[in-house]
Image (cartoon, rainbow, N blue to C red):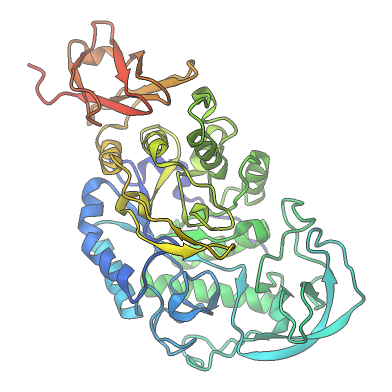
Length: 512
């Protein structure tokens, strides 16, 4: 019986911590070095992150993956192996051992930071044994179209976890636990739907993309199998009790029935007695209706990343003629602010990835000001934007690409400004093509701020910040201007904007 989801704290994303705006960081990316680098760095950085205003840390998939020590983690193999067992040629994952993982998490909690676990329940990879079973092949562009009669294939769908045995769980996965595969030992290429007793077709999806986008890759999990459902419930409770996460990022929800997550999240929240916050990855840039349809289908049990807003940032960064009045157009945060996790970049939008949608460096301070200093949405900062990255990789054309990038100038300042000044009433001034702004009036415990953005020449906006600031002087916290701005008696002032960047005006330290 499907359970109703319990309320989560997505309704108050901007106040996840008492008297502080919530800010999430994705503390990994596709091109990180391995050998335990990440967990060790996280221990070193926890205090600094908390001090600057980060309140929650999204960690990568922590379980053993088919690619072993080189895997980012999304080709997951054994959900119970957190870097503890010799499997796939390694004991540690790319990020470190289980012991290092738990130490890093303890350090986060000791610094008052929340822990977001990355949950991959769409597929499994790297099966231990071949099995033979009956399938039909489907059209890759329209998976509802069957292009063969039933026939048998052999594929690696038997998961016995010989390195772990039955520690933590005795459950063994076989072909009945999957709805489709993309590997045939006989050499036939394509996507194969398994004929099993749990459904005569793919599971129901919200979107009709590719006819039915249930299948993404590897061994696609059959979420209608009651034994699979029970095992995923057991594992979720075990994982929560082992590491103590209080929020989850759900991978590839586009390919998973929303009814599954209504049940799974409801059971997890009931089993733990906690309002586990959940955000789903549904990448559908420019298709806002698909995101809102999914939110409706999940009955409010999760939030979603705002892939539409991220696409706007991508396009805006490619042309300085972009109309800034449209920057929030068709974004999730504009229609469902309490369910939108906003972001500028993530691991999938990085160079050379299938969903590459980079935001040019000049525009990133603008984009971060929009997600960090406005009232709505729960902002997510991306690791390379804060720390920079150095990496060279080979593209699909065989050429070497240097995708190194320095940290984004002013990002730490913007995070701190969110913590200290982004409070109170918001007044928007989005009526000019190349210069927009808004003010935050502040509250009883925080001063407010005025934000002005230009994507062309130096400019400025006359804006109201409130009579409480009459006569007070404001300075540019981004240090783009040396002058001070004095607020007039009626609470209005003329706030300058720099060329192709952002200024954030806050009360000057001395207003004598």
